[in-house]
Every structure is written in structure tokens, then in C-alpha cells.
Image (cartoon, rainbow, N blue to C red; front, side, top):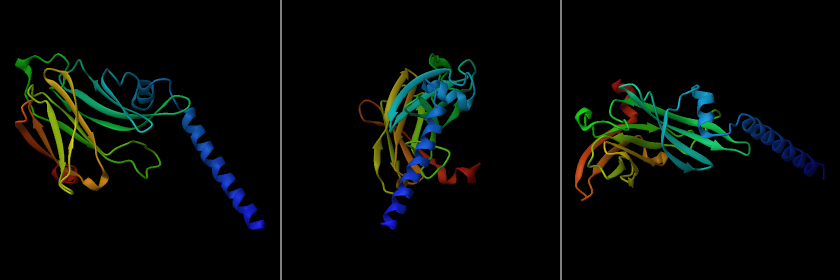
Length: 209
């Protein structure tokens, strides 16, 4: 009987600790996803949202920064929905001159891909997300489909594509950790013809910089 009582007390205390942690998380929540991002990243950080994708218990927000400059920054940030609002989870971005809403054909560099790997946050005490994710942009007007193939398992996953404008296509795909860090990114046109194939190798990125 005494042992059962001790176990019940431990379960109760565990519940209290978890509830306290959840309350603290909720207490930091903001009314909108943008406010949740900007309370961490800085005021005015989000210039132009290009896509919002529901994921897990929140959303992945894809947006542009520095849209008045030549080098636009494209970001993907995960925000989690709580009882009191939204909290920032994890994300990142990259700089490129091509992803602009009204990019003239004459100014386009027609770079097939600008891309990024966002790692898993599993086991982290500071971050939360549905990642890993391979994502990026293309300024090639003929791209209608993007496939991501890993080198670990050989699995091919079709990325979600969002046609932001004629010369701006966003693509992204959530992957599994066991797929590794090296991938082929393959672009196809509307007739199934392969337009380009590039490699992203996150495992060697630090060695090559």
C-alpha cells in the first residue's frame, strides 16, 4: 500500500512539472504566427509571406525578407499552436538574388535551385519542429515538379511546389532522419522531361566552407 502511494505521488509530481512547463510555454505565446517569429527574430523580420503549410501542431511559414534589396532572404520558420496562441519553434533561411515577386526575365540568373536542409530538433530542450526538411526555390520558368532522392535508402519523395510567380517556384519536402544528409534534387517540366539535377550534401557542407 505504501509503495502504491509513493508511485501515485511521483505520477502527480510529474504531471505538475509537465503542466508547469506547458504553462510557461503558453505564457510566451503570441496572437499570430508572425508575432511569434518576430518576438524571437526581431521586429519587422517578416516582409512577405509566400506560403503557410500546416504541420504537426502548428505551421511552417515561408516568407521573404529584405525584399527591397538585391539579395532577398527566403525563410522557413516553424511555429507551434498552443492554447494561448503561437510560439516559435525553429527555422532558417538563405540569401539569393533571384527569388523576387516581380523579377523581370532580363534580370533572372535562371539558377535552377537555391536550397537548404533544416535538421531535426528531436531531443532538443530549446527547439521544436516537424523537421528534417529539404526546401528551396527555383527561378527556372519550366519547373513544374521537383523530386528529392536520398543517398541512404534511395527513396524518392515528391516535393510540394508553390508557383509564387513565373520566375519563382518554392519547393519543400519533409523527410525522415534515416534518409541521411545527402540528396539529389531533380526538376522536371510539365511533360516529365528532366531539366536539372543538383546535389545537396549537408554532411560535407562544413568541410567545403
